[in-house]
Image (cartoon, rainbow, N blue to C red; front, side):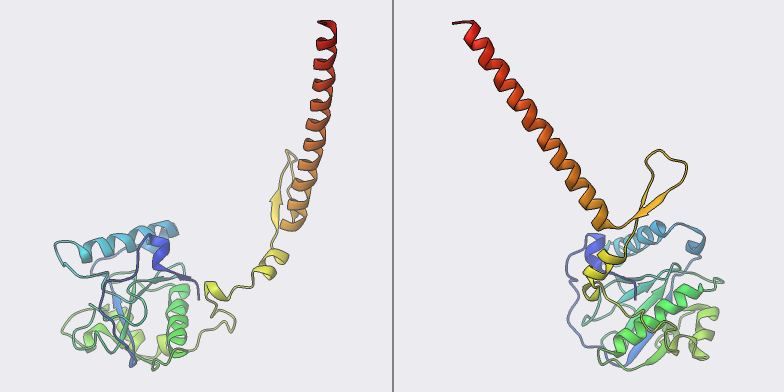
Length: 237
């Protein structure tokens, strides 16, 4: 799961009260069409920050963004209030259900990556003792949310399916840094028409070798400078 933690948005720990939701996951959407699927991923980040700003502002006055998580069209899960926090999303279910809002609005169909992100989030929560049930906002309150498109997917079990990628449930803390370092490649282009790829280790070794060469040259220059100063000193005597 490509989880973007709240700290990456510059947010501290959530000020919402503690809770232990365990019944499942509730699907939400925005009240207006967003069109984020056709925009850069950075727009999703802006949307998430603006949503929180609206929720904690004078119009709402909530302790934090209302949702536990958000799923963007590019397949990322954004942390909102996160785990073990009461929601401000679905009345009568705020302390017993987690919430995820798909960053979309009326008439928008979620992307394949967005659906997969919700499935991964559900599986991730289930690994933490949360039941696998999926409901829509309108199951708790008289509202159009999450819209006819998303609610049909809630009803037909689209979001309740297992994630397609068996290796996709990876959190940042579980990444094997050594494996990433070994497998990664850096594209190199030193003015040539074509690019070559280098491993980070070999690139770092080249930098260290060049540093040693520069140091040797500087040492030689220092020695020559000392010799010149000694000659000038002897001439002045």
